[in-house]
Length: 334
Image (cartoon, rainbow, N blue to C red; front, side, top):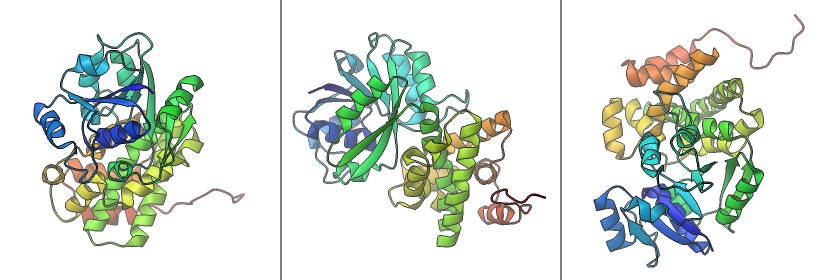
């Protein structure tokens, strides 16, 4: 049995807490919000995970020191815009070599740093890993079969965390490609916004298939230019996560995109979804990275124009369709 500090009490953190408790581990859940912890203490259930019960022996706290001290593993499950501030609060509590696995997805738009880079900068004494893959909280909480990937610098660390999470309903692979895992998990949220916008406009399966296929091409193009492994983008945190996020009713990024396609502004769509839409934050960062590494991301570029420049969603689709003619793969001699 391991002692787990779940840093973040949102739907994802709560679902993982259920999984880890079912695996026989001791779980303490932390949130900075008094109201969130009070609700969990009273109901032992997260509002977004109806019917998924949090065990009576779980500990719920707003005391960060209590959630961190003496824990074998810290699972950092706050939304990506709060990763830096939360890690900063943890830096004087985390001990040398204490393991932290980040399970949020995003890129910091002001620095273009991945979340693991932020954590390593704020908590240099921690041993940092990442977890990503097609894994909606609503399904993980209910114990539906799910497969993800853990990334870490040391194989031993990845294997140790793999053993903590692995169960008959939660299959865990490991990989050394932390950068590729994080980029796949972050950039797919931007493409999911595009897929949602297409749904909101009333387009069909052909359109979504095109967005998914060309979307993974853009993600891999940028990811490999930055040093990620191509195989990662063909795997769970690449095409796997992209498919589920573009197609699922559980996807907050797709849901926000649907609203934008129906005429909502980006701000109003985010208010309606009532959760952090991480693709909005990653979209700007993706375009800044595209400029830095001199790669073309036409779908992500159009999403940025719709989100931040007031471009009509239907016009963005037309502009994508009317781009210069291209070859899908090279091969002719001439």
